[in-house]
Image 1: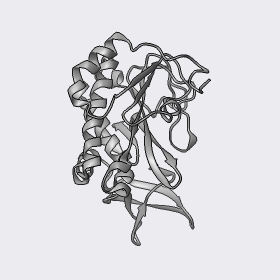
Image 2 (image 1 turned 60 degrees about the horizontal axis):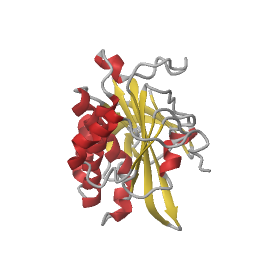
Image 3 (image 1 turned 135 degrees about the vertical axis):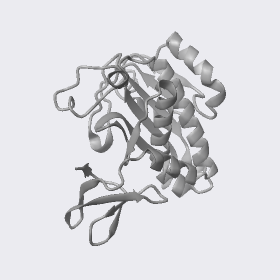
Length: 270
């Protein structure tokens, strides 16, 4: 019994999802070679970790959804999109750079897909969040599956808040949903289809080495330049102003005494 099957068995795709995916099928490229749907699952990323490139896992609800650094992702039924896709950036001629830009490419794609589906302009916050104003709309979690010292695939999970929900008290002032921003809840199946189609296009950019297109897409949606941030360096707390991202997707921050390159870790936007 798999971790997913402890919660529910995979079932047939809902009819609206079948129709929406059929509408974008010519734009899905390598993605959605298989699509698996669960009414309830622990984590879509856990299920997708056992699948081949292009596989998509969708859940109506997650009981153990997670974000970066072990945080939980609030995943109630009927209110969000909870999706994982299996990618293989290692197939790019520049494997190192493709791997480093996978999350950046995904953020651009999700913002583009949401805008196509709803008309809502979404902004990107490094490294993996989508915001409207100062409220979080969606998040991305990329987890590598490896064989020895070689990364074979990356499981890219994303969650989008579609309908309003009874958020926990600690989240109420920090998150938003498409319904809150638009005044009405869009079709989740339509948002799913357009985000997958946009991810397919940006995945093609990643594999073909069109890294400048990805970086330019991210910069055009980032409102971070000049924003104050804080983080913990090996020698203690640091702070500075965001300058840009570099060619590998790392955040460049001006500390006042020089510029620092942040690749990972806990970053606070102040």
